[in-house]
Figure 1 (spheres, helix red, strand yellow):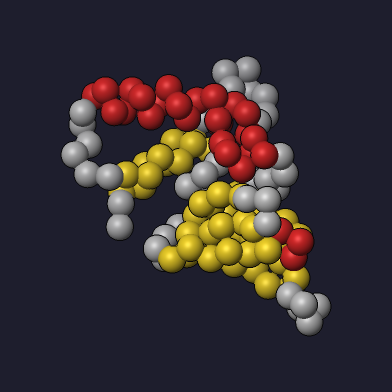
Figure 2 (tube, one colour):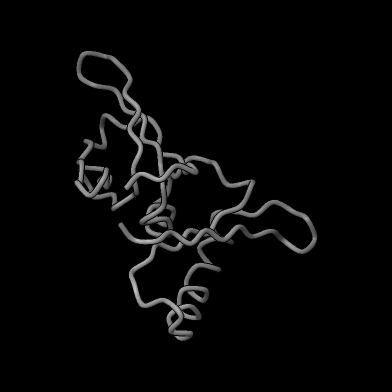
Length: 123
């Protein structure tokens, strides 16, 4: 299991940090970590804020937070609501793909109620 590096960011003026702020910070941080050559093993980089705990909605949200821990709430055909936690793998046209302990679970999009960021470790 790869090491997880969690970085919590805050705006200098004290305002709310958005999903876009986390996404903008993620790529330069990853590039700086790679350039430093400090880590020989694989790792997962998580960029978050105390204010981030909201639902992922747009394609950009799902692209920006691949690999982040999420909780998916979905409704089965019998009407019961199920909650599943894992690392967001991707969202396709038909499914939300969730990495649960190294196995990819595919949840049909038409059954998904919410997908939200969490602090859990789903792998």
